[in-house]
Image 1 (spheres, rainbow, N blue to C red):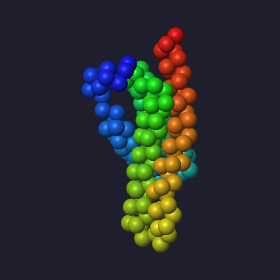
Image 2: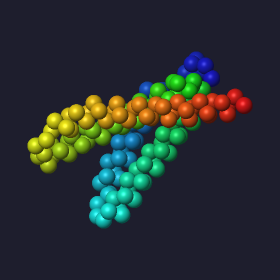
Image 3: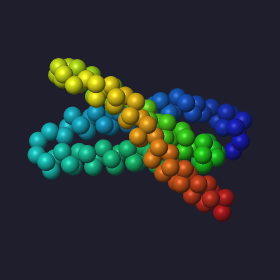
Length: 141
């Protein structure tokens, strides 16, 4: 689907990026809040967060390639940006939490505002690019 065709469908890719970034943040904060208790409970909630995030990630890549008709690189960019937005929001949440409990070590939290989105973007882009390329190849076959 060409760019004009994607526009006709009413898609708003950048608002979708932000919305999915918020979804990643909600998944992370809710599961972190629920992860109280024994080590097994904490691990279970962390795995739940990963699984839910993987579903969101995969669904976005599928949507970008199959429904919006994006090229694999563009689909990967959008998916990785959503992950980076989620990482930024989680870093903001963690910084707010550190301030609320009067943690004296605020500098690492401030560094995380830059580092988390970058560290999440790079592997997310690579994985999304591979997945989108495979989806696009299957679509063409």
